[in-house]
Image (cartoon, rainbow, N blue to C red):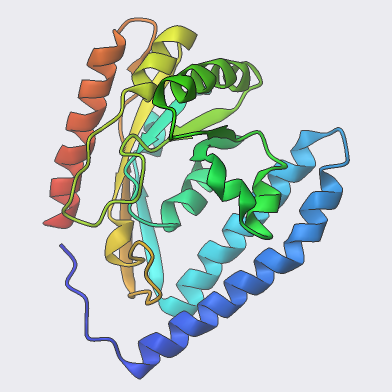
Length: 246
């Protein structure tokens, strides 16, 4: 597991500069995205979102020295499906959007209320759910998820539901397996250690190499939902142990 260096003035300065650039890029691109959303072609909005994510990833690397290494891209099926990923940081919400074509997220409704960022989120085909009503949320997720899959989107789900600190683990929800079985699509597990360099709710960004691993797909046409979820959890946690201790 990565051991952070002491917080130095240089780290604070670099992190502050990145935050300034991150905020500026988001504010500048907001009216562009809102304008593009008036057009019937969804592709324009998608390209803008990828550009926003790419700019932030590049800025993070150049300013803060946070680089990345991605393994297993050969495991990504040609046909779209579901991504079940570890959630430690804001970094993977950017990178997964770049790795998986035409991706949308399962997210909590509260995010849509955030100024600028939330306004843009609402212009995309993300699946917003009310976590306060679990049963209704699952029904909504399955209904919207099947529609998004038919439209050609990849659906990104964080099974633990929230960002988890490195070395910790929360209960895995079963929504990925249920949706995969109902829709007959694959689930691709993803593990990474982004939280060691961009901590959850953390201001300081630590230089180093984030490692992301993409696992073999699990077929929703052949496996039961419970088996998919079990295999996803076992694969991710095994890889997390390898990544954090390598």
